[in-house]
Length: 484
Image (cartoon, rainbow, N blue to C red):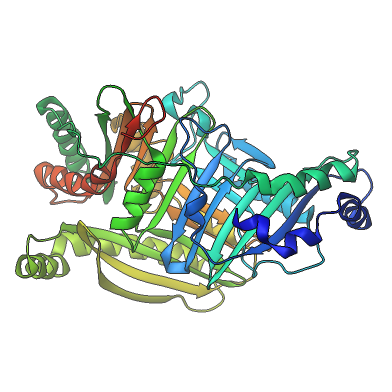
């Protein structure tokens, strides 16, 4: 394996010497989170994604082209499941605890600043007491974890970083031995892969469409009523079944998404013996670096055309459409206000511009600001999520309407997904264009923003265009574990 040839790793091969370095940094009766990094030959981290019938560890594959970052993370050195309305505050406190007790072990090099340490996926909304999470139980209202191994590539450099938790009263040598054994956790790619995806995709039934249009009509009536609502984003889940004797393959599905949606952030979370959550999202929720932050308003959608002429015509129509402009401006206004509450000086707003993806065009506006102080990532996450692009306007009124009328547990769909580094900086995207894979069953999610003047048929068509991205990427393998 590539990592076995690294001379840097061989320098750390003495467990006693490593344990001595740990003891020098140790504080009495306190746990530690230890990290040891090794530079590798330049290579795509996704080549370490082994194909297994069911992973025995939490695993995340991540591809973020706007930041030039790809990584694969496996195992758990520490984790927390979040529940209830205080989940974001709990997440912030847990990340602060990890950062306070985190130690880089040398000698030698370490990855550039901004290496992911804590990985995170949060549900769209916290559930109430006694509310059944259904297929999302393994994700709770949020999942944060420090991986045991993270292989990352950025700026032409590839690194393997090994993390371990040392208990308050645990011998240092035990953690040293686990760190040095971490190279064995870098799994080489297994043979084979998923099928070409050429199986029948289940079409929505007439009853499903009628139910959607009935809910859409109810939303439009509320929007055009007493003025309490300006926008509501209605989501739906489309169920698909793998062919007999097959299961959905999260690795091959993520790879298909990465190949087709090069401008999107692609993710695949696999939970031990449970479901996988995969997607390719075009929407940045928040990025924080030091005292600088940015977000993006992404609202207003039209499909791509069959040829260049038709495509250009559809793009021009989107840019000029009053309904889409109104929907987009509601999102921009809310994000500008939320960011401005934590900004030092004016907020920069650049847009809207046309954002063209493989299957759809969007309107997008970039919003950024200098923060009043560093370390505002979780404050901004709480202020921004859910944005009007996935919830509605006003936020609380829209969420209350959805809780009563949407009839769907979104789980992690449209929730924040991302990572945090040792300095409290990080990035979260909105988990769109995504699906929950459960053996031979997949739930693909999409939503549409309704404003006064929307039509149920038009919004149904918008969700169909968005679902096309994930449907086309679904891949299967033989249930026995071999390739289909």
